[in-house]
Image 1 (cartoon, rainbow, N blue to C red):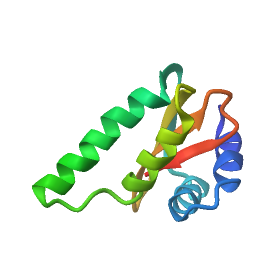
Image 2 (image 1 turned 120 degrees about the horizontal axis):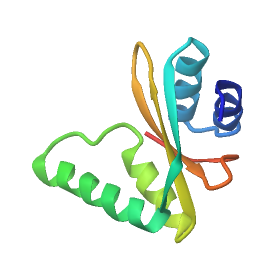
Image 3 (image 1 turned 45 degrees about the horizontal axis):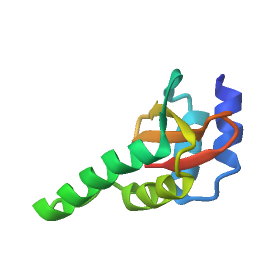
Image 4 (image 1 turned 90 degrees about the vertical axis):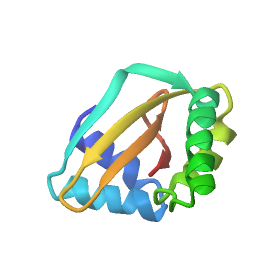
Amino acid sequence: MNRDDLEAVLDRDDSALARAALAELQEGADFEVFRSQSSSARLLWAIWSDRHQNMLDDGAAPWPGLAEAVDRLHVEGADRIHSAKIIGSQQRFIIFLSEDLTRCVACM
């Protein structure tokens, strides 16, 4: 997946964080798509929902987009999900992509 492909996927997602990730990418942010690795959405949901709950229990502010990402991963069920990261000058993002890399499942 190249930069243009990732930009197109993020452009189709109307969430505020996907828009922010897209802006960073368009400004030349570094990115990596972990295409050779995928996990079931159910496993990712379990991991990230636990992290979210731990942040809440500890009184820490959850990461922007984490609650929405947990909800969106839950909806995906057993589907395979790829991860990507974008490291911009202003923010870092974790992106969850559909197995065929055509859809942003969640962004945080």
